[in-house]
Length: 327
Ligand code: TYM
Image 1 (cartoon, rainbow, N blue to C red):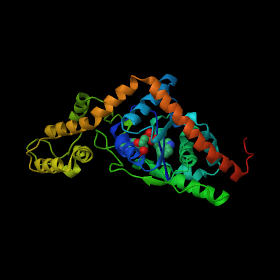
Image 2 (image 1 turned 180 degrees about the horizontal axis):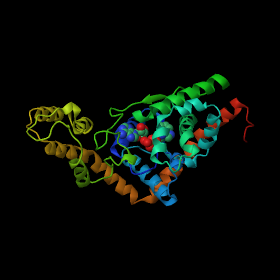
Image 3 (image 1 turned 90 degrees about the vertical axis):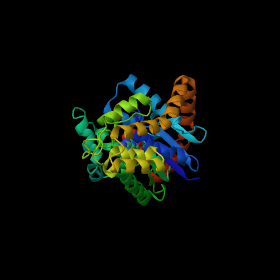
Image 4 (image 1 turned 30 degrees about the vertical axis):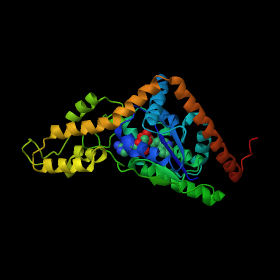
């Protein structure tokens, strides 16, 4: 069976960008692929999180993934640090990655600017650990948002290098895109992200969502309700594309162009449609929070399964590169 693998950092609460750009595809892919999904806590260490906060964030992200529809009977859901082979393969991949390739990573520059007081080596080598994550499960498909393109390209190059030097071992991992690979935040400018504070959280209530939407940027040229708008340049309209039925979208576009529909009403319709998606997710998340033993059970079982797959890859890798086999 063809494999899929992906991960999310536990660095804050999940937002609609994570959901639309990645998790919706995880839910789809688990139907036809052998799926490994992971909360990448080792990656999050590059931001030196408070230990208690990290522990909690790992649980919340796992809850969000499950509440969104990842089914533990179909997918292997686990926490990265519980599979030590990630770090082991990470080192091996480090020795195969030219410094020049890492120097090109734009995320390193962005992340360094966000935490100038803590530009640690992990921030720089981060994409190598991501390469190892993908390689460890010999994944063919990697469902991620557009912001991961550079990392995926680096992973492909590194794995091709491994195959060239040591013999064909890893498949060429293909990116799987959702219908919303780059969700823009409430500011209408930057990619929605935890660090920008421009996100709509996955667990926010309908009221919280509407409050945030009230301040969200729309078509900048539409100053009054009586001004006809241009839906194509409006971020709220693009979100309708992710959450609203086609018929309603056509009505909204016509209403906006003819100035019959105001931005507030358009936002209210979006809030209703968002709630139709988020309400059931919030309910399932609440049920999971009420049953911490069930979450532990899922993550422990996931880690056990992931370790078996990871160790099988590592035995092959150790043999290929000439390391003494562990018995
Ligand atoms: P992270 O935790 O930043 O984001 C998790 C997933 O959400 C997607 N995403 C978005 N998609 C569309 N629009 C947005 N505004 C948006 N914001 C986030 C991301 O593209 C990602 O798919 N390095 C990765 C985690 C990782 C990983 C891996 C992914 C570690 N190892 C192995 C795949 C395979 C990251 O920081 O994602």
